[in-house]
Length: 147
Image (cartoon, rainbow, N blue to C red; front, top):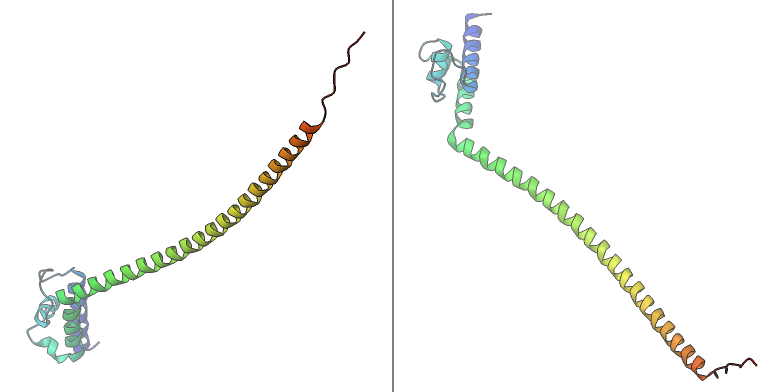
């Protein structure tokens, strides 16, 4: 490996350590910057600027780890969890709607059966009343005396 490749690898490793919070030379709470990455890599000031792709990675990391970005990610997480909750509640609502329809149908069938049974009871009560009146018209047999 050439010296240039070694320096680039050291800068990349330093950036990874800073992002993971496991730094060797700088305070882990320090803000991410080109200078912080150079110090963590043990390199001199301005040495990272020879590697435009590394500088761009550092700038992208700064943007991703900014409080605004973290707040945006928190909002996105909140929105995502609320969408999941909404999907669950919609499916639950559909389930309850189907159950309600089934129960209404059962209630309708039971009401129909109830009406049929009430009609049958009424018909049998009329029949009983009719038979009672016929029985009352029949003559009572007189008891025969035994002599």
